[in-house]
Length: 547
Image (cartoon, rainbow, N blue to C red; front, side, top):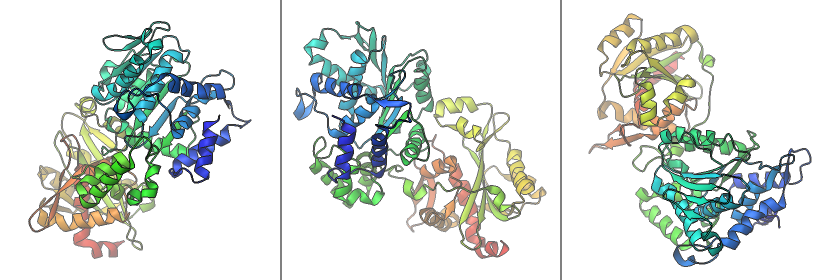
């Protein structure tokens, strides 16, 4: 039985509704089954072996199915078949070393992964296999571990051979173990992982955790790294990186023969009210997950907007911002890019949000196409050098990655040198001929910097940080973001800042930006952009005529 072909046939016959990306992946998998030019072949025995193992030995431990044998759904069988069935024709080792399996909550992910973990522990022909389940919290990492342990306790043939020790499950015959791990990547060095299961990837803020666990597999012959998740509200974390990577592979824009992307999601956000589309994100709907429960949640969300973000992310895998955010992720997200040299010898409007030690300092240049009125944003960010490494470790924000990409710069010492900000504006003038007609700035701690900028010929305008000044420009900024009228070069720092931005509304309906999340989640990029937008609001016609 080839479950990949069976699944694809059901999809193409209209018996199963799935997302466009899942279809693309399984169509390619079907094409790969008999590809004579590939270095990989499909081994039917290896494909069905873990499926037969799970259905023969594994039993449910909770709810209405407690004590009953696990019967895998077709979508689960197709996934397992692909993961274990494609092998190198010369070595026989698995093709796929990494996978992102994304499905809405309550679709049998934990049960399936518990079965896979048990199979790999005792039947994957890997001596001394080390299997780890990791998550942001150890309690989350224990969910799959505990499910595996509960399965073992119900299997007399296995229970007498697998030992439950203080921190792990141990299989003496092959000296293999299964252990849950918490998020602290500083304690993960020295592992020799065969299988890593990273649960709820969307909540993993520590990128180093992923990198350390991935590196821990380097000595294994056929390692396997399984990431399972729903969508989430934490942006610019490792989830966004892996999701983007998986989408590119699924869409065919990037080739990685060792990565299997399975992304069950709605094809567009509006489908959340379309019952016929729900299975796109919920492949186990009506079998594992109850339709009535999801219907109730949807109806509640229709009448209570506060419930909407949760259902979009957890039940339909639509990436979003937190519920009290200013804008949704769909509103913010724009992956269009541009080349700054295209604007050589153009005018711009500048914005600057200055900090001293903790917050980011950000400088903005706003450019505009005279005909289309599309806005183009380029920014630079700064942090002090002395505490930079500590900030990366403690904040779990990828400042180091942004530094490598040239999106962020370091100031010598333990505070921001505003002269570096001046130097960047001068660089934009001298290198690209981009001249800011006005630079709007937050007056906080800016006195001597303003004098320095004016001495270099810049026109500086104080931007008072209150509702009277900011409300209408902020509304204008929000409308332009929603209309995809702002090309910010897909800058991940600005995207992150925008997702962290909430609003405070006064009794007159005026709005100002506030931090919507913890203090570590910065909004300085938003503030700097908003300062530039105040300039655009006050000088729109004058600016346009000058272009």
